[in-house]
Length: 467
Image (cartoon, rainbow, N blue to C red; front, side):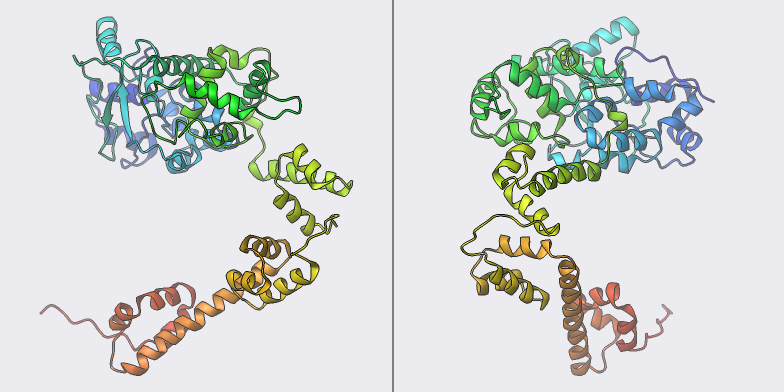
């Protein structure tokens, strides 16, 4: 059993592990082998997985490591749909799935994996504790400013697969640059929020927090709709001096209304910095996130399919009651296309008078789709859009599976014919020739119709020896 150095204020778990192998003389391979049973484990800098194993070997509290020495609470707060799975993967030794649950890949932040440090914090830590270390609050994706001093953060790119390296600690620097005021405010808000999240178990849904304060500031209509034009106008003025231009984290223009709409989607997945930037403008203080609002427990939040089912049931209730598409759309926030589709799937008749997409046209589309025609050809023949064709196909039970089977059989016939034609014109060819000249057909059949392919291929030649 190992004894890690005492955690310093706001210290990252990886930083503690680096300090441990630096002062103990134990190699990183030996430590990883003891904790995880493998010396090839690669630890993520701020979403370190395998916390239960580390806590067991080092006599630590798993919850303390999770909430105070990683960024897991921040990601769980802004990604409530993935929170439960992310926490589970972080505690267990499943770093790849934890990284996928964090949605970092889909945010298109464009930044390499690394560690960030503030030169002034390094100087302060050396004077007070005698050693520098990596701070949790400095590692928040998108935040490039120290929330304590307002100085720009230095970035150390991690190029090696193994990040548990002796003496991999922040180094003193003399080049200190200060960030714009707006970026310091966001960094300060982030630091405050991270500290509050570490000490709380039951949290509010961030979308409800936004709507509460938008309503207080008269950015919601009496019907609950967001005055996006007014919001973006004031928000753009507030962040006009922001140095970053990455559309993944800041609005493209003042007319980028989707930026606000996406943040207000319940269960949406967006870059944490988007929330931090918007929250800084709307709330001012991180403590406002938890004041005067009902709390919601994210640890027991339902998975995405159940949330979708609840929305579908709500839509069906309105449609069965005879409510119009416009009324149902306003009440549920779902599009008319979505409502038409679930009405068709559930056999609910809608009081519509279509001019183009009549029942006769729908029957013709279904007949052509069943025969395996391409969507573009069906649209051309029936004089409707491809979107309408796709909606009708997806709304009829069994039709999608039938078309998939047709496409599979068509691809199989085509690839089989390519192989047979080549064999007929090159009877003396060997397997490697076929693989090179008909690579697409060969590999498709190898994956999907291997029994037939093996029967058609020439007998494998015995490999010749070197001597």
